[in-house]
Length: 444
Image (tube, rainbow, N blue to C red; front, side, top):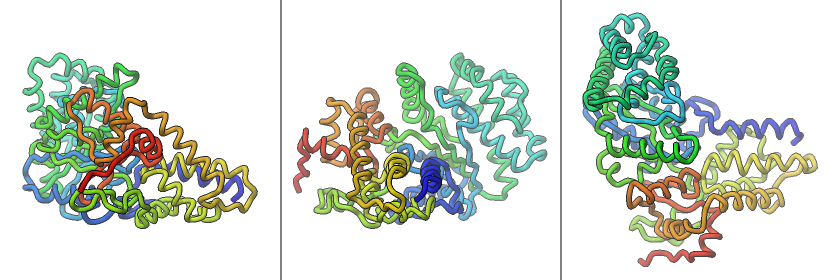
């Protein structure tokens, strides 16, 4: 490859975070698996199995870079094909990433998102509708927002989020406020149901897992707000007459009380290694062995974005980088493959990198060192426990959950799925963890 090709290759790789529609030519069908491995298919079936007019709550989660926003678009398409009216909104259109989420502010966001969608879809017929008129008057009188209009409600909420936050903090009866917003949102849902002539309305709220504080104190406060809202106040997040899917941080799925009361589905990393546990939950003989199907999917991911990759990489080289990523899409595309492409510019034109080439080995070594630096020695016993049991359970909502949340946020621990969910330490850390805390397979 010449330098112009290498630049185009790197550009294509760095676009890996862009959310794709299922009909986008870069979209890879079944990337995360089919059948019992398909988290989106499982979520769709869970939604469709509930009464159409009920108020149902679902959490959709997964580590950053797994493609949640892309797969939520597939969920939207799949449900529409089953006769549902779907309303998808991005929370970051209404609030900044540093906004401290509460049940009250989140419900307001959802109601505003419904109004924005209805205005885009039905224009003047919605603006003249009583559901919008009552909501708009309440926003001006009770929340004290200025210049409220259905067409500009995204900008209004985002620009005046300080006013909203202050109002929420001063509430003397937050539950009553919640019920009021739920009623407004329910009225808009009923308007949408009537106009669309579709009985089941599904609301999809994306990007909530991206809310985070700036600095240690704010991050700590944000963590508490998220746990309190989604694990404590979940019943207040329902919308009358609709199924609501919230995209939430992955660590919430580690809390048993969340799993017991809310349907929670996780989008996992691609399984590039054989499943370490058999159907009985015991260690299998294929532990840490490459999985051909998963490697093929990772190659397809690159092919869809830059079909000329075989002129730079041999298939076994790309497989080596995929194995080093543990099936983490962002790490694979933006760090490992992009890193090798960057270093290849200094090689002679026509060079094809094999799995044993110095550049491939160097990039893997550099990423191993970076990944090791994401951990501290005090965490190694916990990592050894996860590597041995393939389970991650928070003992409490404080220190234990925070530790696991950090390990998942930095992708030191990866989440997988093959019918059931399980966890493993990032493969770049296997030598370190095996060397310092010998991982013994569980006895049969």
